[in-house]
Amino acid sequence: MRKAGILFNKRIAVARELAQVLTETFKKQKISVWSCAASDEAKAKKRLPETSALLSLGGDGTMMRVARLAAPEAVPILGVNMGTLGFTTELSASEVFDAIPRFLDGEGWIDERAMLEVELPLQSTPSPVHALNDVVVARGSTVRVIKVRASVDGQPITTYKADGVIVATATGSTGYSLAAGGPILFPEAKEFLMTPLLPHLGLSAAMVLSADVTVELDIQTTHQAKVSVDGQVEFSLRKVDTIKVRRSPYTTRLLRIQPQSFFYQTLLEKLGGKEK
Image 1: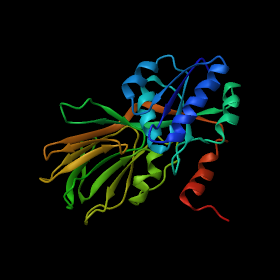
Image 2 (image 1 turned 120 degrees about the vertical axis):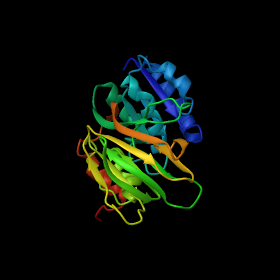
Image 3 (image 1 turned 135 degrees about the vertical axis):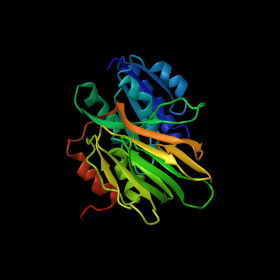
Image 4 (image 1 turned 45 degrees about the vertical axis):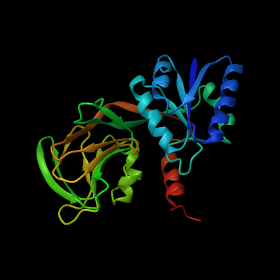
């Protein structure tokens, strides 16, 4: 490891403190290191070139932000959970100091996750945007269902009359899509999901889509609707707007030290199904 970056959730005091301690640890190992808040995206992007690995200090939300930053440079991420669920992270704060020497000695492996590329219709919005978890088109502040016409590779599928529609990766399949009744995909799957949110009549089942297709979601409602990318990047939509979603050319590369069968154990532990 030639150069390490540390991105932390500035709202978590212990994450800020751990970033300082880890910075000193890397310096003692003669490793070049830089650190900043994950929300300071402009600063982080300048430091990413030639960075060998990133440490994400926070929860799943911090991991989503760091993933979008790291993906274009293909920088691997080691997630340290300092939030609540920590489904995408690898280590707890208490494990990090024992694990880092193992990574420095060449242990571990790369868990590569598919991402989504989102083409937004708004002229003022940099496009495309990339997502590790999901893209959600949903109603706004007005408590009314919206109409969203869904097409796959130009072929109309259905017009959802629902609270919204979720397009999720395999990583995102254990999140909002799962809560809406969608299936769980194996984390290395390249396919993605289209899951309606509380549909009123019509097609109610989630669809597993090929990794090579493009999904178009046409807004057909006069009241407010929104699009949310990874629950963090959000924009209002108009009736004339169309969101296009396809598999991203980028992937998120997660550093792992656990056995490659870790997913099943984590699934049971985090989702509450582990046998006593």
